[in-house]
Length: 186
Image 1 (cartoon, helix red, strand yellow):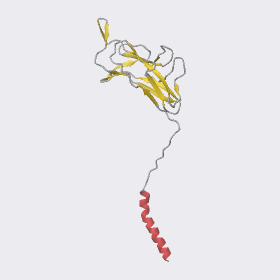
Image 2 (cartoon, one colour):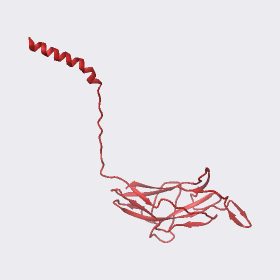
Image 3 (spheres, rainbow, N blue to C red):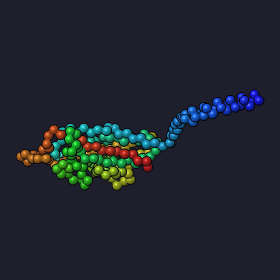
Image 4 (tube, rainbow, N blue to C red):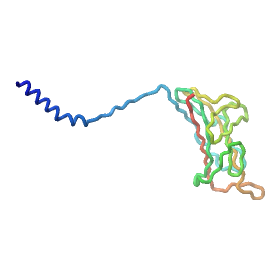
């Protein structure tokens, strides 16, 4: 008889605790690592040209920028430009040329892969495209520190106005062009 009474008391004690146990919760965090990752760096990441003249080409050295794939898988390198905008008033812009021709308020930007044929510049447009040397396969970096170097060339727009046959831009504007370099798993 004592055994049955004891079991009944334990059962009642458990029944009164069960709603509290049902409301308790916890979380589980699951961390999953993959064996492949993409990581690229650009050095340098800014080209400060300074004052520019209308309808004039400016260029870096063909080894000016180094793209390094520090990840552990092969990647194809893509490039895409944006219109140049006035830093203080982004509504004022120079359109990035889609055909290689400049005009008033239209600039042109190219890249050149180091050690490629001299004068083999490739147009940078607002459309994402794979970087490549002249007449070759796209640039692929295999990873673990593999790198390529490239340079840039800018052709400024035609003059905003002329005085005595000399072209000028409206002064005091700081224009900024953004070029995006992407790594896409190969």
